[in-house]
Image (cartoon, rainbow, N blue to C red; front, side, top):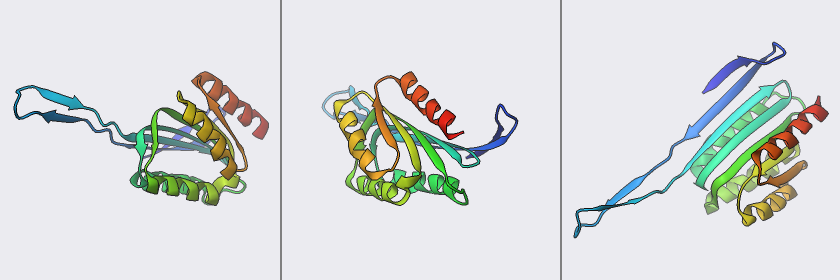
Length: 168
C-alpha cells in the first residue's frame, strides 16, 4: 500500500506500508472434548516514509522472520532507495515480540546489510531481551551508521529525532 501525505511544512511525502499476517492454531485432543490453543504468532509490519533523501523505516516483527518476509521487505526498501541521491535511512525496529530469524532469513538480512549498509544512518532497536542487545552490536558491523539498543521506545524515538535534526 502506498499513501501520499502532506507533512507539516506542506511538502508531499510517500508512506509505504506492509503488514504480513498473524496466525493462531487450535488443536484438539481426540480423547478429550476440550481443545488446546497454541499460538504461533508471526508477522511483520513495515512502514517507510520518504521526504527527498530522508527515509524513515518503522518495522515491528512478531515471532521468527522468514525468507518470505524478506521477499516483501527488501523491495519496499529498494523502491524507496531507487533514484534517491545520497539517501539517509533511519530505522525504528520494534523487537519486543521478535524471536529471531530462520536460517534463510538470516542470510537475507546479511545480504541486505552488505548491499545497502552504507545508506543507513541510525537504527534504533527497541527490545526486551539480552540477546537482542548483543545482536544490535553485531548488526552494527554491517552498516556504516550507528545501531543502538533501547528498552524504552520513547528514548529510541528521541535518539532518531536527533538524527533528523543533524541531517537537516
